[in-house]
Amino acid sequence: MTSSYEFNTYPARLSDAERDKALKALRDGVATGRLSHDTFIRRMELALTARRAEELVVLTADLSTEGRLARLVFGTVEAVSGFGARLATAWRAERLPKLLLPHPGTSHPLRIGRDPGSGLRLSHETVSRVHAELSRQGGMWVLRDLGSTNGTTVNGRRVIGAAVVREGDQIGFGRMAFRLAVD
Image (tube, rainbow, N blue to C red; front, side, top):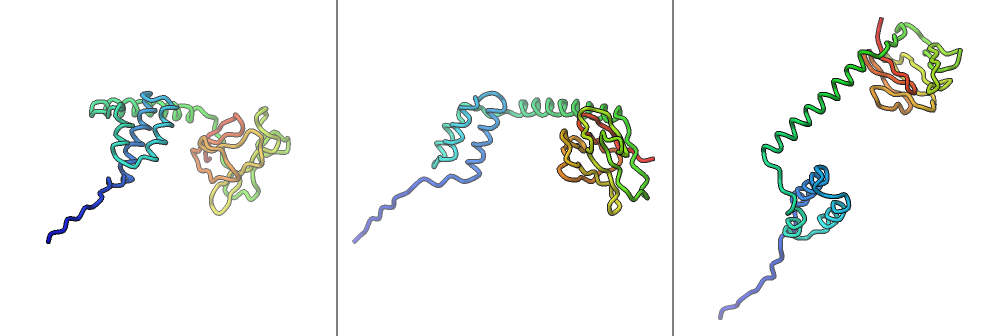
């Protein structure tokens, strides 16, 4: 007596790697202008709900994969673009006026702002009356924003509360910028 067994076979579940590969292809497609934003959003929703690999293939079929030459060209363009931005930043940094850090033995903080009583008075409309404070704490220089209207920045990033600064850092008070230097 022979028995025959039938098993229901279901397609294998999509792996996270397959789904990530399709999502990357969609992101690259919108980044290179081959997909509109609306098409990207719709296809991304479909990719996240897809159950079979065939569904992902359909979503990315019209997005040809880049060849080695295209990757080389895009990589070169990206490197050249980045170099120009880095060069412009370095050029601006060298041209910024220097702000000398106070002598390390100074115990009181340097107050910065438009107020006549400030240790560093900056007469610019984007600088608050009491803008920031520079002090020595634990062997480090700390720049603290004192609730200024137009913000304090260190190397292009806005200071929320306080930030440690060093010689060579670019600091900004409103739209005024300086490069920190030591005597």
